[in-house]
Every structure is written in structure tokens, then in C-alpha cells.
Image 1: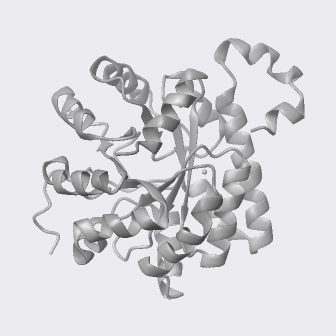
Image 2: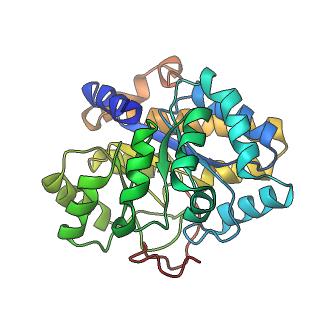
Image 3: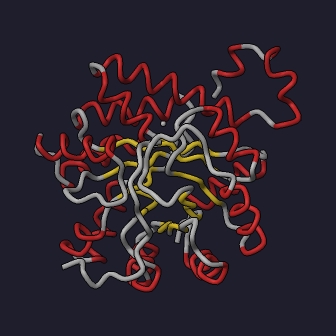
Length: 303
């Protein structure tokens, strides 16, 4: 299969560059705004863009993204409309699109049909937070057959044996959940993330992205310095789009995107000279709130 996500990470690694992966919810505030937001993020430093499909029971999401999904659903946003929009926008994006969706919409459409449909729309990666490793084989294979890389999640409580098993199956990169909770803005990241990254490096050489809880430039820089290949930021972007009119929201996410990319583009040894860099160089180039959430072990109650 064409490994667009993997190839992009390989290119970034060759430049010793950490990837920025912003997340937004499709249809909040409107699908037209989502399309403009994708263009905006693409122009302002996003290396990949994660697009969330609104879902009625988003167990991995914190209050900010849950509220965004609820608003989108209330306005009639459905998967078919999201993919129609993606099909229009994706040919004009440099950043590969990663679709974030729960498993029920996939199951309802049929795994293979779903993968073919999203691939036709221009999706290049897939994250399914409620699909456990033990039940992921069918989806991973069907997605791969359609040219899509399926990224699996590692919980901070995962054993080395489970991390190794997930690393073997995950494609594109490995999504390290930084906390035992839902997505959301935190004031600081746990030092445990640094240890996890070190431990994971002993197990796999696949790229590792850290998400759930990164809200600003300092936290993004921190995970980069700890050895992450990507900083995944969600609620901060979603909050900006929800808190203002469309024009102001788009301006706010453009600024946040530039700030985050600038922060993770600076090498640790270059920090002393950071203040002397021109604003033009910086311009070359959000997270959410907590409740308890554990990655799924079984899928028997899905219904």
C-alpha cells in the first residue's frame, strides 16, 4: 500500500523535525467552517490534520470536544456530509488527513466498504479510540488494502508486552495517550510521559505521537524534548473555533498553529538564540479536560 503517513514522518525525521497534528471536530460550528479550518491549518504549519467525526457517545473525549460533537450533530452533521466535504478539500491540502472516529459508524457501514469510502474521499490515516488491539486486525487489513494507515493507541498504564504488541500492529505512528483520562487541556504534563517515551524507544523505532492534554507551546515543546515525533493538540483548537465567529476563530487557530509549530521546531540547544530569530522565520512554519478513561480491552458491549 502507499504509506503516505509513514513517508511523511520519515521525511520529518530526516530533518530532525517534530510533527504538529492539530485536531478539529467536523461540523463545528459548521461544515463550511471546517473546510476553511482545514485550509487554515494546512497553511500555518500543520504536518498532519486529525479530523474528528461527531459521535453521540464519545467516551474518549473531554467536555470541549464532546460539546463540539453535540453541536455538530444537532446541526445535522453526518459522516456522509463530512466525507463529501473532505473529498472537495483534500486534493488542495499538503497535510495528510487522519480521520478520528469511533467504531460503530465503521461497523454499521461494513469495515471494507467504510475504508474504501474514506480512501476515495482522500483520507490517509485512521484512529479508532474504542477499538482494542485484539479486535483490530480486520480493520487494519481492510484499511491497508485501501491505502490507509491505522494508528493504534497506547495507554500510560500499558505493560511493555502490550506496548510491543501494539507497536507491531500500529501503522503510520503510535498514538501515546499522555494521561489516564479523556482528551483535554491540562496545566502540565506528567513526567510519566517522559519515562514512557524512553521505554517505548527501547521497544520500537516507529514514530510516536503524544496527545490528550497538550494545550500550548510549552507543553508541545516539552514532549518534543522528551523524544516524541509528534505533538497532537485538540481541545485548544476546538475551543477557539467554538468561542468566536468563524472569521475570528479561523484567525485564532492560525495563530495557535504557528505558535505550536514554532515551539517544536526549535532544538533544545538552540533555545538561547531563540529570541534573536526573526518573526519571519517563526511564521514558516490545542488539548481538552478530564474524566477517567481507559483504553478498551474488549469490545463485547458495543452492540
